Image (cartoon, rainbow, N blue to C red):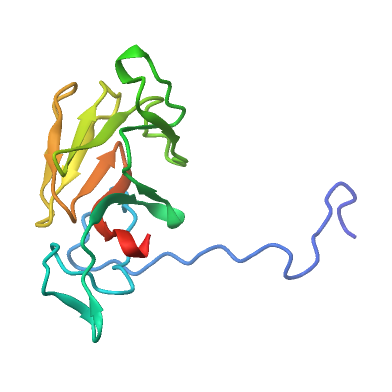
Amino acid sequence: MDTPDFIVPPPGLIPEAPQPRERAEDDVAGDSRRVLPAFPPPSVPLPAAPTGGTTLAPGRAAPTSWMWRLRGPAGFQLLLLRPVLLGRDPSTDPAHAEAASVALVDPARTVSKTHARIEVVDDQVLVTDLHSTNGTRVLDAQGEAHRLVPGRPAVVAAGASVLLGEFAVRVDRAPSDTV
């Protein structure tokens, strides 16, 4: 070897650096927006709302009861059977004693320790920002983001995404017979 203080790794051990992508005409110079995770559609299409005469497949009747659930990146799924506190390391206090604590893995570190409370009340999903650092937004079906007022619950429709900082969870309905 020519330089005694440097060890050369064998070929193929270190991966090649990614090539820069081609810029589209509509790209903005210096655009540093982060891309939020996308959620694949369910593998079996579900009816929008429970109805007695709707069928999912020939011979299979629609379920009579529906549950709310949260879905997120890396296969994260959570049925909303009781109120939940979401955050990096959520801690319960007497005001939220009945809520389950659910820790989220957020590589971007935009989720607060105890970020938001999500619960089902009268068959509606309510999200309350718990005075988080990066705020909570709801991205509706039309793609419009609505920032939540800290401490004030907001109703979230099925199909909307809740953004905890930059961490996204999708709110949807799941038939109870498939859960």
